[in-house]
Length: 142
Length: 142
Image (cartoon, rainbow over the protein chains, first blue to last red):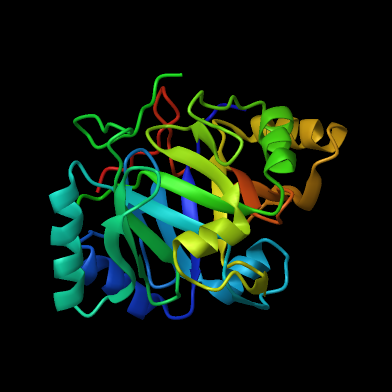
């Protein structure tokens, strides 16, 4: 099994609302392969997929019941600290739910959290110890 | 905001157990930057991070309470159908929890689901409509 992933799938309550969030708040563009049942966003080598929560559970043959903390976060790292502040200013202006305003964190970085319409947590962070390449990929040499 | 992601962070019940799962069942190698508090796996341009669930919630300043379906899945796409079967045979031999045995699916692919020790769902799929490049990246032209 290669050390890679292909798709992050988020089960959403309302596909239209979530599409709007990622398009308008993040400024991301939907792939043409998206349709009224499922959405795809091309990220760096992987796809972000949005799919109705009940149907996602059904596809995996598990119960759709669940609540509270989902036990996962997605992180978007910036190239400098100022970019974090700038993104939060933009989120604030656009009415995005700020979960944790940005600030210095114990591990030496600068980060904050926002939530999407399904309370999926996005950490927006600058990590001076994790350089990004020109395409924005995180590639740490072991 | 660029259309990319840096880290998928999973909040785990027991870091040692989860490390063992990803190392032994997936055959993945930990990055040297991992320590007793946090684990990192280098994926294709992004990192998978494992962190204690309570601490992940604390970092995001949210309640750690939550149960049931987490509303997200991670997908590992293969280059052909046979590879899906081969991976499931391996998972079965290694005692990985099979959530949904592989089979043909309505959208024209072939897929199944397994769960990690925290019930994080991994879909193992062959999607004939989503070609992977030499490095295993999914890059769909819009």
